[in-house]
Image (cartoon, rainbow, N blue to C red):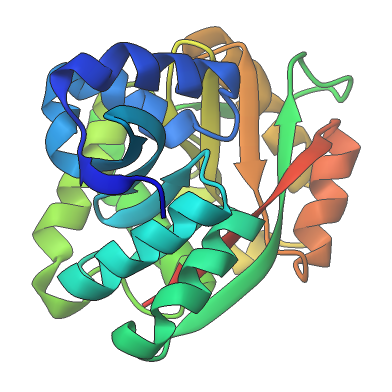
Length: 275
């Protein structure tokens, strides 16, 4: 290898901002973190540098996220990750980058709980042509105890474990409350029951990423998801950023059908390794 892996330096931040801005959909999460914490992000990022100049990066938080890596840098990052060991709960990002990194560390890190190798990345830059559900609205902080069980149910259904397990209940409640306070939680609440909900989990100046789309089981099949998502897209573009994105498991045919009906276009492919 021609270069080496080192911590991100404050002097690298203009380079990193340029890389993230060049592909705001792919790099939405890291861009949102950079806009939120600024120079403090240096403690969560390493770079692959040649002659001192960064070429690509790796975000090391709860998620391990490759940033514009190539084969050479992925090899170097794999060596680094094998040496430091696993700390995050997932690895997520562009499919080729994630899967090659995972191949490089799996022998050292052990088996994954799940490998989601094909997750279409979708985006919208306009409001939907579908009439939005007028009952989908921003959740109020006094409705936290209504929204929280729906978030727990969605997370458990999607990921396979409860977000409250292992003593994480307080932190998870705080995260849901944070999204509500930031005006990034949307729901249709009928007679005190959340029947549809979604959140904007990350938002930069240029793009935002929707997560946690969920319809209550007893309300499924009633046509709530398409107008509900149309409302979320409209609200997210109004409240958060002009580009709205999400990624979805390739086997979730019902969700993919919904997103096509709303008007999302497929612009890439993610992969997620869950630990």
